[in-house]
Image 1 (cartoon, rainbow, N blue to C red):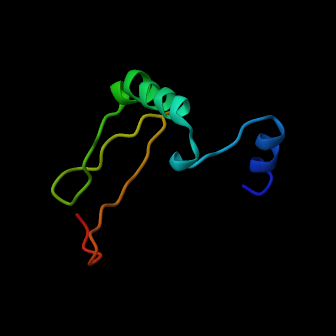
Image 2 (image 1 turned 30 degrees about the vertical axis):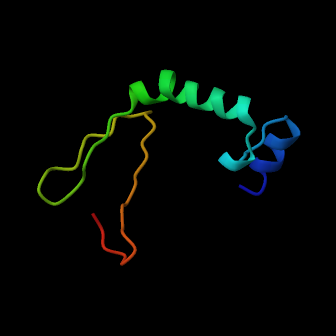
Length: 74
């Protein structure tokens, strides 16, 4: 991370928070997500009542753990 971020920055690639985007950038990101990202998302639940899902080789997988304010997991 320490070397990748500066290298990306020197190539003109920067990371921004949502509140740093202007109106045109927000509109572009929203439209891109709707048309390109969302259609290929496949949510999978992982819990003790079902087998762990098959993760395909060379695929991008993101895990999310949901908790509430009392740190209870869902």
